[in-house]
Image (tube, rainbow, N blue to C red; front, side, top):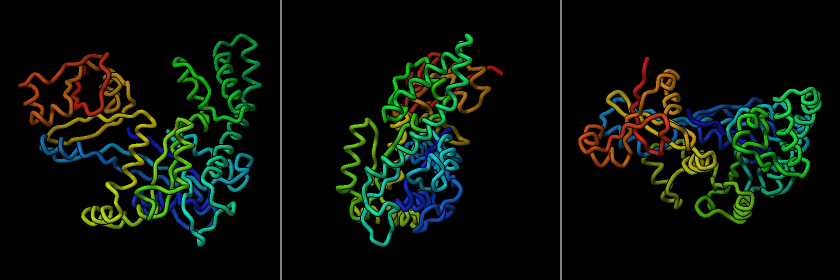
Length: 365
């Protein structure tokens, strides 16, 4: 599994340009007018990870398979979207399907690109987007609450539990705060997720800057970074224009172009890294002559669940995992070297997988 990130923002902030560049496709029409994206566009990219090539070289793998990140480009929201303005609820529904939301914010001046509100203010843009999502959540919860309350009053225990969570979310929303600010206990997590609240999803602020500001940011992105820090969120600086140019270059040309701009890596890499950190994701690997492959997990996941990411039968029949750390695998020249040095560990059902683990699962049919 990888993860799915929704790209959300006001019209003309560079969402579709960014989507095209990141997925290296032309499936999202980038145009200087609102609502050029009529249906959500979905694109997948391989998650860059230099560890894959190193492992594959040692294992002499015939194929390298990275884990995947799915981007969903969702048409621009405007004030009133929660009540159907613009293209409204049609797009709000698509946001419910993603793991995290990237708020793409315009952090550049350009008189040739119209802003829907006639001014450049990324924090106000973020407020507009978040307000519409909050209003949509509020309307959804208030609609669901009454029939649930009737069930709860009749003694339905599950309804009582759901009602308690809905009231927690409504309390936050009525105070002008997103649902993710509500205090949810660990044992309530699954039921909370089933509410499918837009503002319960983690948010990443993406500052779309001009080319000259790609390395250091600018006053606009500085304001966004402060807002993100105050909210306990994350922010990343990226230039959609630069990413679009990179998409048309080969590997050598990309390196030279990035160097000229004072950048160490493409914005895609920074965006993915921020997304992984936001969602507390880690990567484990499988390596052998046939293929070396990366797999994505939530941090804190136990070995049987990790096995289930590869195949459900692996989780059901899990016996143990043969476990090697990435550093040991590289330092000792692969699986046999680790076995000889006693660096391969046999881990059971309670083992919590670590980032970089190279795993081989044993399971019963």
